[in-house]
Image 1 (spheres, rainbow, N blue to C red):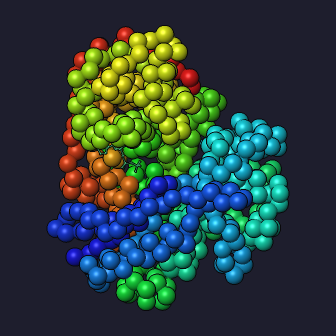
Image 2 (cartoon, rainbow, N blue to C red):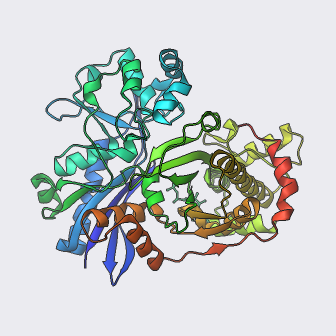
Length: 490
Ligand code: ADP
């Protein structure tokens, strides 16, 4: 029974998931879970990548005990943007910084003085955001930092961890495309941007497509884990690329929503969209599996609800997500609206009070109980999806009739129904574990167990449940949509 291991690392925690391929079905088993706390040290905010690697080895040791030599391959996906620098002998030159490290401050201005943002967008299809690797590299170059001066190679976090697993270094395209230094049309580095920034060209090495076999586990890793020479595959290494691969879109509209702590809505396209309108709408073109482009927009997500839940737990009331959804269902609809992407909601804190404060400041009814707060958050998220969907309609000329949603957030049935109503779309929800599923099917194609991504998506359709949400009474949402638009910050 072939087993594939997906190593899925988020900016808060990581997991190893085993994909069991049996009787033409895929099932998932969690093998190991661990924290991934970023650490603030003198000189910046860092990732403990050595600690992460040790946890990965521990997870592989557990997997070896459970599945032995049925394990066929291993693939890693992580959050985007963060990178490591290595010397010519492949040694790590310092811990990777976190994307929220303040070294990016002031760098957008420096970058845009050298090349205006609209031109950078022409080359890379990516708007400037504080987390882009471009700004963080520019900060290193301004000093210049000893790490950058001594660097022979740059690897993104999943590339680094794969390198440590198998000894073979390559830069995988989906994660590289989050850097704002890659041309999504050619799949090569955006050399004009790299030149204009004055970055050392030599560190931008060999790029590979998702699904490229990298090698087998190093002897050291085999000894520590008890595994044999298992193959390591560069999967869809950016977690959103893995999630999109794992959302089995059936029709040619290919409209998707990756719903978790954050929401990302996008279209899977064959070519980047780099029009002035796309730039003005702050849409990004990242790369996907099978030469696809993920034309996308980041939107706030269930972060709002997650933070409400955390706050109420601090106040002594621990509620499950199902209980929260029930409270929202029972509350009066369309009392007030928030822009989920307003900066007031961006950082951790007392989210219920911030929602009340937002309503107070904008002369809206101030929600009094938990149900009202949750209802406002859910309806506003659904309406924000609608606003983004309308932008996609304008930008592509497509009408869209169906949305494929994946990720943990699809378990929030209230939000899914609200999204169907607000967007006037049919929603096909699944799988919850889209990221691991995408990571796994890319490995299965790479090792010849599946013929194509399409076959992998068909396997997912056979293996999991996909609840469908139909828009009920979309006309009820038209008035609220107009009221909501008045509260949009961006
Ligand atoms: P991440 O993006 O951090 O990986 P997930 O994809 O795991 O997050 O999704 C986490 C979100 O899913 C939570 O914030 C929560 O709102 C939602 N969620 C998880 N479980 C449930 C549930 N049983 N019912 C409703 N919502 C849920």
